Length: 150
Image 1 (cartoon, helix red, strand yellow):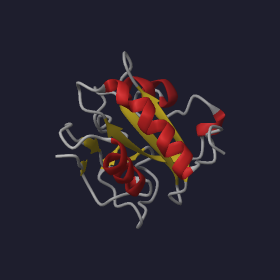
Image 2: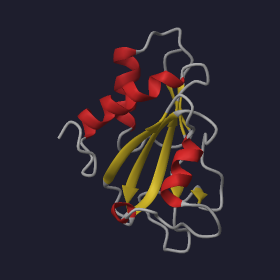
Image 3: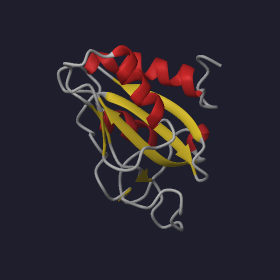
Image 4: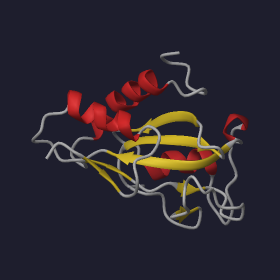
């Protein structure tokens, strides 16, 4: 059962999530689930690299769960990896960064290049696993806006 459930084709970083699962998780644990990419700016032209599945108008995938989120720019360069764990949820954390309402408003200047978000949700009973996955992904993928592991 030790798998990653992808809602779409594997993304840049998806292979590292799969590596984490196969290297560090027991096979009897419930699966980690990766949501479809969410386009923060659906009014912009669609990328051929990431066919539009979810947009800002949709709820955050797995927004009610603890997990890790990956932030990509227009060209699908990985910018940042963050987490929501324990008493935090992915939707709550991303709302803090991007706001709510009819259009996306990044609240921090370093988030302005962001275009896509992918959420990777922990099983509901294992929210404390999110920090381990986040640290593994940062060290493995070295996104340019994370300081750890660079």
